[in-house]
Length: 256
View 1: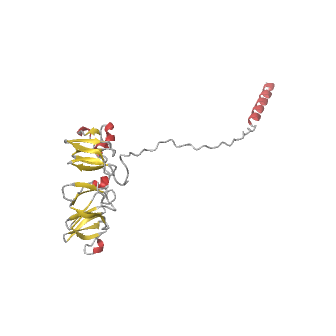
View 2: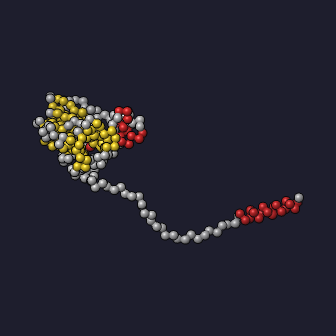
View 3: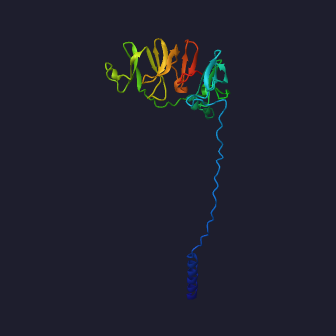
């Protein structure tokens, strides 16, 4: 038994000694680094949809012979006029919340709503009809929290001005007005920038667009400017010089 214990002690000593030996480090060779090329393909721009003004939609509704189609930013028809209603490419919240998950993609801003022969469709940017509206497909819109307008029109002595609601107190003090009442009509357009809204204004029986500082954005040369969502959806104004034929202009008064 004593001999067995001695043999076991010798074995443990040898084992500990062997593990305590330092491991020699192999010399590290200098390896030249090779830059890895980014093989991710860049998104190709569509030559039919050139970006002249990044603030504007790539496709803009345009009327011809009582029908609507879509032109690009150069004014070339990409989708031929065949619809009696053509909206901007924008989200449709009813389709985005459709009970049919496969249809929700057609509610994104990659598609636009059009109507022909009293039938409504969603089309893609090539003009292909990808979906026909059915009531059973539509879900309930999830509305975002409403953002209160900072400004509002104020009428005094028959003329319109602009006030900032939170600070306006005394109409007898002109300094309390953002724009002192001097216009025949003012209408604040719906938009995403409540601090700098666009305002349809009428003076001397013609319409133009101003901002809250009173600067003229669109000159007073139109018989009418529609009070719709064209500024919010497309950053454009729906104008007419005869009150019958309407078309879109951008914030530099360029016609499309």
